[in-house]
Image (cartoon, rainbow, N blue to C red; front, side, top):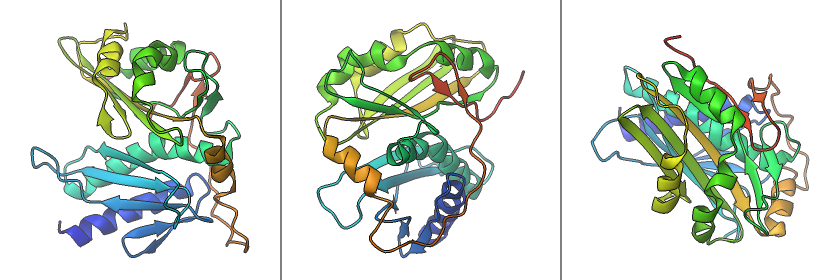
Length: 267
């Protein structure tokens, strides 16, 4: 696929997935415009090993403002063709990262959880659902449903939260016993101490591959929360958004224990 074909495939996926959250996005060149001042930007993401299926997407809260941060995140997908991999990557991004941003915009507890973590005083946290995929995923899903990762990682995360406006924290963990991965990225940059702390937790390691991915937004600036709440409400009425059913989510144990299992295999 050429650059234009890849861009078109990614944009189609974003439009479809954002409609699941009741948001109508339309193509405007390389940009996807959403309700109000929201938008999603796409940029090229060549992988280090030359493989296809990576997407790099930025969720814009206030298009045209240089003072509002963009929530960037990269996702990789699975499939037999490049288009299938790109589509899978967009779905992974939508289920975790985009759902967290939508919850920041909505602030209703439908797509994520809110709390003021005592372990990170002064910060407001929004966490979307975790996506668990691979073989025998029930064990890892169950563990995530019973454990809060943010308090466990707070001490190592605190030095990485350098932007009081908005920090995006991606957690990726899993693999299999003896071949594990635990990575924490803050604003797209690997946070080594936090990654080591994540790897030291007692999440289940099975004999077959299984992974989990989740996203957290942290802000210490109340102005960002106010901007998010008004981002989708411009002065002039916007066209009605397409509303479809919410993605399936399961809450276990209250705040920051929400997870969504996107796919189960091998059970």
